[in-house]
Image (cartoon, rainbow, N blue to C red):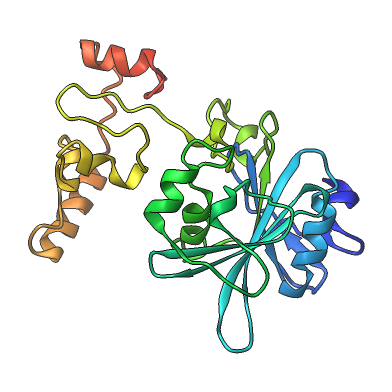
Length: 266
C-alpha cells in the first residue's frame, strides 16, 4: 500500500509491535484479503480511511466495542460507504450509515437508531447470490475470535488483486485465501446420493451429505478416542519412524492426486 494505504505516521513492523504508530501484516500465503494488527487500536479508522484510497481495496472491517461492553462490526467501503453489523445469537441487524457497502437488500437494512433484527436464515437466503455472499454471517463469525491470533482489521481486495505472503519466496503459489466477493467465496460440491441446496455453507456440507465429521477423513486414524496418554505415545512412535510420503507409489489414486495438484510430485 505504501504511505497512501497506511495513513500518516503509521509504520509497518516486520516482526513485532513495539510502538504506538506500528502496524503489522501477518500474511504468509497468497490472499485476496489482508490481515492487519495494531499496537494502538484507536488508529484503525485512520488506517481504514487511507487504505480505501487504494484502488485495490474494496472493504475494510473491524470489531468495535464500547465502554459498556457492547460490540458491533464496522464496515467501510469506497466513496465513504459505512455500515455497522449488530447481532444477538442468530439474529442480525445491518445498519447502513452512509450508502450500502455490503450491497444488502433494502428490506434488510436498518436506518437511524431503529435496529431491525432478522434471522440468520433470512440474511443467508437474501444474500447468497450477492456480490458479497452471506457476508453478514461471515463477518460476525470472524468477530468471534476463533483463531489463536485474530486480526484487528481486515481489508477485502477487489477481484483481480491479491497480497503476496512470505511463503511465495520459497514455493509457487497457485491457490489463495479469499476475500468477501463471490469470486473468492464460492466452491463446487458434487454428489450423486443426496440432494444439495443451490447454496450451502461449508460448515453444513457434511450434514447435507449424511456424513459425520469423524467419517469425513476415513483414511486418517482418530487417535483420541480413548486414553490420551497412549494416543500421544503412539504419535511419538510414528514421529520417530518418520512420516510415509508414498512418493514411489504409482497407484491410480496417487496418480490422480498428483495430477490434480492435491499432492506434490516431489
